[in-house]
Image (cartoon, helix red, strand yellow):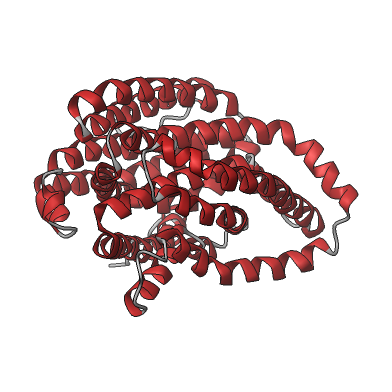
Length: 429
């Protein structure tokens, strides 16, 4: 009997996703090792302070990139086969991030003492002085990752992720004795970013030579309206993603931030497959929509839904049943947050099951709908955290975050169907 062959669309999706997933798993394992080592070296208070600093870095970096990450993915795909035009938009994006980064870095450096007082932290200003130096290399690192994704270089895209940095930082932290009173955890990220920064500078030197300043300014003028719309959506998404951390830091303390963020990171195990599959599928989504081929687009989204569902449901059940066991790896103090982990796992499950709704809205020209969805989510999340954290504590942030995640994913899922006719939920037929 002839061996049954996997359909080519499934084979390409699974092969590409498996590659990114393998790198993602390695990065995630290093990420958990990094958290473990940070908790061991700096304590849950020091780790909480690091998470506050990283939250501020993430928000500042989104403002620094100004939506150019989305523009790069869209335009590099649209200019396939036109290397000079691709170089023009990529060079313009990197030079824009450099210019805005200089201003934001100065603001972060001088505003560090004020932010330290706002979050009742003595360690935070020291971390933020390093964040100010880290901002431009971090923005370029993320931008280069999106260039690789646009060019469908999935191995490079998988390697240029936060997990690669935590792998190197974990090795450094494990091998080199650290004086916690001198070296902040953010300093480790800056050190391991230096090789990536050097590679970026080398690549930019080659591409910038063929792109004049006039051509870069033309790209800025052409891209800024769309980039600004994507910036608003990105900022809203980041506020939605990090507001729980910031508000725990404001209402409670750094120790509470450390306890919460460990639970949050464990809960993201549920969306491992989603990251890998979305990385492979995003270019397909943009291409099928540009071709006007709704049937192929729906088939691609259905394949994504199958993979997300098959992975996310078992992962949710395992995390829910064995929450204390998973948290116990990080220390006895974390086991009490099993309820927090279960709430966060529920939110991540809805995120996985609803599918790549934001990718679809942004890649099909419905950036405004994506922005409006995020705006509603941000308001609900801020109100929920402001009410529940002072009354319920850390678990209150998990409840507010999970409810909001279910709300905006469901809202966006309906918006995708109304605007494109595409169903992203596997059981919605």
